[in-house]
Image (cartoon, rainbow, N blue to C red):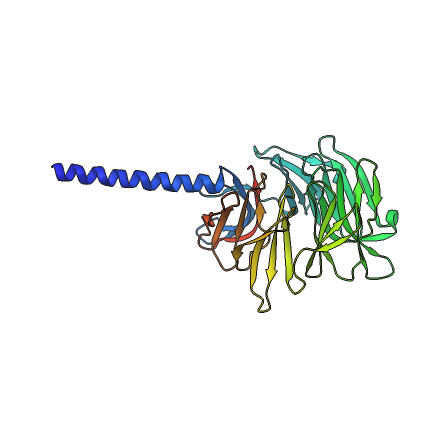
Length: 344
């Protein structure tokens, strides 16, 4: 009887400690955040797949369906609101976590390739390649700026727009009407002026535009090289070795760091975290990351999925000894398309 009691006691203590360790690791890796997952998931016994945005509370399972509206593109604000474009009726909607939503009539019948919230959640930029750039205030449902190709005598060439950390500037890419050269412009919301900084023009497509946290530098990919442009002294600095190739850059919300994907001569990929103030780098992920990785709103964690892996993982950047922690494993027939982090 005594042996049975001791056995049960030790087994209970072992299970309790195991659960506490698991809970501690989960809390350490996630801090109670929620991931937005654009996924295909089976919805019936026949294996019919449904494409939608699922919300996955990292403290629970499984992902919960949030919307299946026929969106072309979408973005999450820092205060956890979703803006998405409905392809069927050519309208944009803002949806809250509790399910309430409203149409932005200021974007009605203006198809776009990109929707982007400002960091302070006050503005939304809508970009249509080769056509226009619109900035709206969702709170009042009014247009702040509407820039057409004819307004700047340039063609808005790419579906990208990058907000400065203070939400007062928006960088975008244009192309000459008479050549293939690309230029980086930015809008100053305080003056409503379109500014052309003397960043060297490029025959490549500028990609992955970002800002320094104080707004003094603009970062960008030109081809496969990662550069910093100083707006004060008008100098350009290459941020990686000349022989290194960079295919993708993803900036932390506060622009303190960036995750860059480096490609070696054998086309192997590795993700590095770059401190944008010191330019120090640290390799954190081996393998090809599917789509883009997601930064938490506090800029301290990243979530990602390595291609050919069924795992969605989180890495805590505050802990120098942290290793990737699996927070979700794709189930049978599930496929992952895009990931965003909402909440902290």
